[in-house]
Length: 166
Figure (cartoon, rainbow, N blue to C red):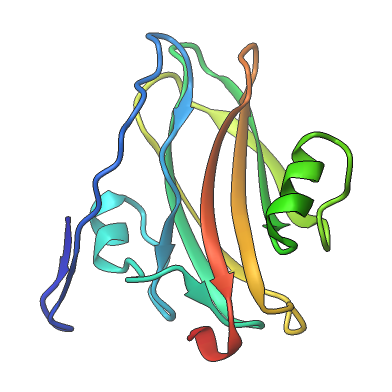
C-alpha cells in the first residue's frame, strides 16, 4: 500500500509471492518512479516517489527502483536491464515463445557489474531516458541479476508507451 498525502493519492496491490530458498539470491519487483522524483536510496524513499501507473511517453525519463537479496557469500553481481517489445499480438507472441517467430522490434538494454555484499538487502535505482522515437504499444522492463555461482534471477514489469504517457 502506498499513499501520497500531498497529491491525495493512494494505491494498493496484492500479488502471490514465491520466497527464495535459503542462501539463494532474489530480486524484488520493479517499482516505477514518478517523473522528476529523485532516485531513492531505500524503500521508504522509493515508495514516496512511486508512479501511480505504468504508462510512459517516448523520450521520457523513467526512474526504476528494486531491491536485491544477495547470497550469504560476497561476490560480484552482473545486472542486465532491457526494454522488450511486446507488440504483435497473441499469435506472434506465442510463435516467439516457441521459437517459431521473432518478436516485433526486438529488445534494447544495458549491462553492468558491481561487487555484491553478502546477505542483507541491496537497494538499487536507475534513471533511463527512453528513446524519443519509441513506437506506441506494450513493452516489458526485464531486470536480470547474475550473482557469482548462482542461477540468474529475473524481475519483469509491463509498461505501456503512449503519447504524453496517457
